[in-house]
Image (cartoon, rainbow, N blue to C red; front, side, top):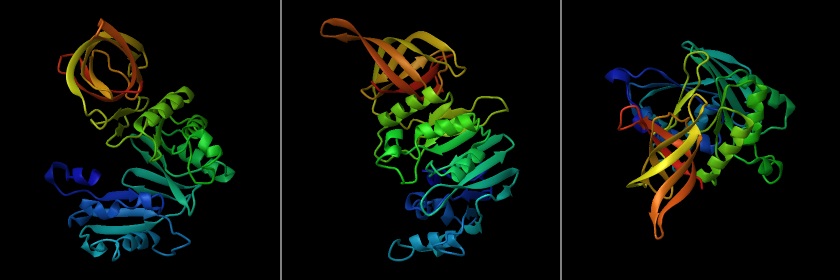
Length: 336
């Protein structure tokens, strides 16, 4: 998806791109052979990861070459005409990319995994993919990584119950552990990441609802989601294109909507619900709700016995400019 949208700014030369690779498990590297910008001659890429004790020198380069070796892929890495440079880093190291300072920490995951702390002029992002709590030294490394971060992206693959029983030792965390670390490290916003492949959207919505009972500013990562750091002290801004708002039909119903604004204030508004389906709807609002916040929607709809009220609960997954002046178009996915 990212490779398909890749383009040089203003039609000019694409700037150098730096990619931080956390570890070598298949689900974190398998997109590389299909990443089309690597086949464009004018592009330049820098890859960073650790030296694996199983592979030795040039581990990252070896991994990329091996997964594209015959007969696993139609072409090998020589078909990639972009410039590629590989740098090995160890846990605890720091290096700079432009104005950004990057620090690494080891995480608790089979065969090793690095977390990255990226300190930028706009704020701090901590990126901790696969990690399991329970190792005191590595738990402390995770807190150091996330300390005071504006955005803390953390592994939330399993439920707390799974982590204590059937998935213990698998190298992953839960939403509850992420909320604990975010609170302990005084991170400002938690982004739940690395969802279990068996989790449906509604299961992720349920996890998000529980996480927000433990920590105030939480989002669930979604394909196409863009998170923007603002000025110091400002709230993190998040936006999702229309990834979970399809399969709707044009319709209009009068409704009352209750929710929370971006600024954290409760609101209640009479409005019109459009494009409704079993999965969700598009709602025109004067108030700007918080992305991924819960909305209560009470609609009046015609039924066999006349007009009936329907009470629905959903989550905000999209906010766009509205057709009417002073309104926003809010995409909602219903949970019940």
